[in-house]
Amino acid sequence: MFFNLNRYWLFLFLIVLSYGLFEYYRPKPVDWRDSYSNKDKIPYGAEVIYDLLPELVGGQKIESLRIPPYNHLEKNKSTEKSSYVFIKPEFKIDKNDQNALLKYVEKGNVVFISAYDFPSDFLDTLGIKAPRHKPSLKDTAKYVHFVNPLLRDKRGFIFSKDDGSNYLEMAKSANATVLAVNEDKEPVFIRLDRGKGQFYIHNLALAFTNYYVLNPKTNKHAFQALSYLPKQPVYWDEYQKQGRFGENEHSVFRYIVTTPGLKTAYVLALVGLVLYAVFSGKRRQRVIPIVNAPKNVSLEFVKTIGNMYYRKGDHANMAGKLAQHFWIYIRERFGINSARFEENELIETISGKSGLSQSETEALVGELNDENSKWTGKRLVELNQSLEDFYERTR
Image 1 (tube, helix red, strand yellow):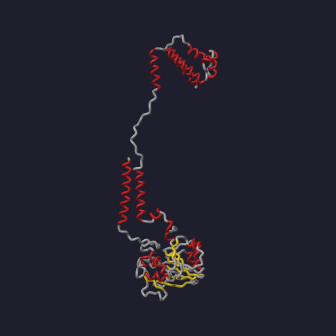
Image 2 (image 1 turned 60 degrees about the horizontal axis):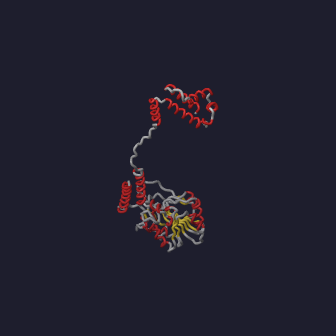
Image 3 (image 1 turned 180 degrees about the vertical axis):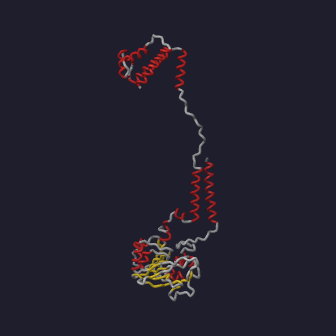
């Protein structure tokens, strides 16, 4: 059993080890997830622009946040001006976050948002829209140009992975300035003045990913867009991309499930343990032989003794045994000790407690006390039947 147990554990260990080595040495496929996270080196991560951001804001402090805007702004009551940067495909905030950002900007701070989709309530508050053109089967990527002549590139910037359907619309009442447009003159980057501060709404989030920031043909767009940020501390939002846990709040399990190779090995180990529990976790023991229950031979013993007495013909001895059993029964059943009573008083007592008539009791007791008469087989059988009837009636 011990050998079999070790064999299963060794088999499971070899499977996990083999898969781990395979995952470690095999060529890693390109991860095309659009994470936009400052921790990811993948093409659609944002590690490069995050690392270069301090140079774009004059060496100011850059702080990555893993909490909602409302939580941070309520906790941080500093009067120092700052900027809040959001870069991801879909910008999501609830009512509390929205109100916190509006107050934050009105006090003279800056919010920079680059996304394709925005909450409708948020856009309505700002007086803008972010519609999309109908999708097309052909390549519809469009060149993007900055409006400012100092930033304008003759060729423009084109992002091949973009479908060209995104653009911005502004209401006439919106206090907005167009900063960049696509080749159809549709705005894709605007500034909205609100209170003492500004909202920068950018509609081409791909431009800030590693793939395009490292591409010499497109990298200027990200740098020139972020050059509108004033030289002041920047809060970089990672809450909408990595979740609420900070760098020091990662558990071992969370690290495993967020790493593809480790996650697969973990699942494989769990499957192996389940298979082991199903096929090898059963209790092992030798086959227990079937042992029949002991037979009750008391009845056979009684029959054997009865036949012995019957064949011997000692009927008087058998009658004495029956009488002895009768007086034991009387003592245990009714608490009557025959030695303490006269015969007439004894008969009355037995009759009163057993429910038999006095004549029946007298005949039975007289038969049992008759030691001088000759006992025949027939008489012995009649006595036994009388006693069985008495026992049956008094139980």
